[in-house]
Length: 386
Ligand SMILES: Nc1ncnc2c1ncn2[C@@H]1O[C@H](COP(=O)(O)OP(=O)(O)OP(=O)(O)O)[C@@H](O)[C@H]1O
Ligand SMILES: [Mg+2]
Image (cartoon, rainbow, N blue to C red; front, side, top):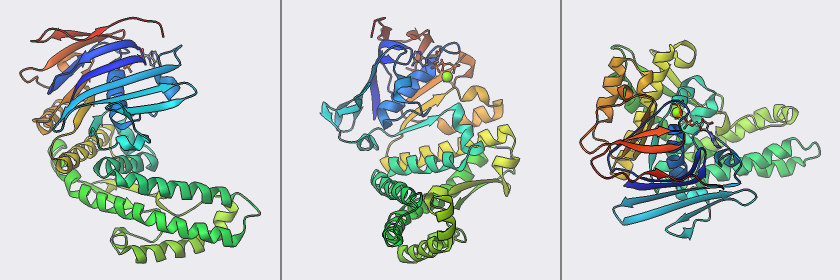
């Protein structure tokens, strides 16, 4: 699967862009603030329906504009395809795949698998548990799009139950029916996350060993938002897990009433990252945290490659410049023989070695121009009003 063409209209600092991409390496070099990350953001948005910067749609539209459009044209085993994602103020987002509107953004998941390495990945280690839950959930959605439906069913129940808990006059019997629904929808989420962490653990440890200083070990531990329940219990059958969650809900009922929110469940999960047995969030250096985050992304890449039978689209945003020489060489080795890659850097020194046929683009002020390309240039920018 490759993206052959990227078309942007009023997206971030691009009024209009038509860019032909190569099937292997595509390098984007340019000064800070040029629009390199915006390009990768557009590709990820077209593939997954959401921005990696968690931006609002209104922020993605070029300043002063009330609409934007991102079109990805690609090739896969079945032939060519087009994903046309557009947003208009007051109308929301619309996605068409090969001209047919998809009813939900989640229907995009799995169509174009993507892994993105970005400077914000440090948040996977330094950030709140929400960042790590999002990592697990998005990976699960890409691996198994049906997970999204399980996850969103549970989210709906959770939101409803939280509303009830803030209603002083809520009928206890009514709350009990929502408890039952919470249990029924939360258990598959717990189990899917636990299974994923079990698969990730050896993979992350091996990839981390290839990147880190000798002797350092990274291990993962799933910490479910269900006090007293460990990974081994989560491997248990669903009915046993449901009983544990029911019991926990009974135990915390008084506190939930007082605090007006659900206190147990997958929304309180965390993924512990232990470097030599100690919490990497609290004790690892910035470089060690960066290495741990890279190992998580590389594991994502491995699992998606395994699942889809071919490498996902790889987006590397300014990643190599942050690493020391040893880690950079190790990362480049681990990324060798990937499928299509889009890589950004402020200077060419921070790029991995180019394969034959790699395309190199210069990005500046929302312009994308070829620096060296064996084939005629086909990327151009037309300035226009929105
Ligand atoms: N909605 C928007 N409309 C117009 N311009 C925008 C919008 N959002 C961001 N920008 C501009 O895009 C530029 C940032 O682009 P981007 O983050 O892609 O830069 P970059 O080339 O990746 O820079 P760096 O090397 O610092 O990471 C900024 O100059 C910003 O002003
Ligand atoms: Mg950038």
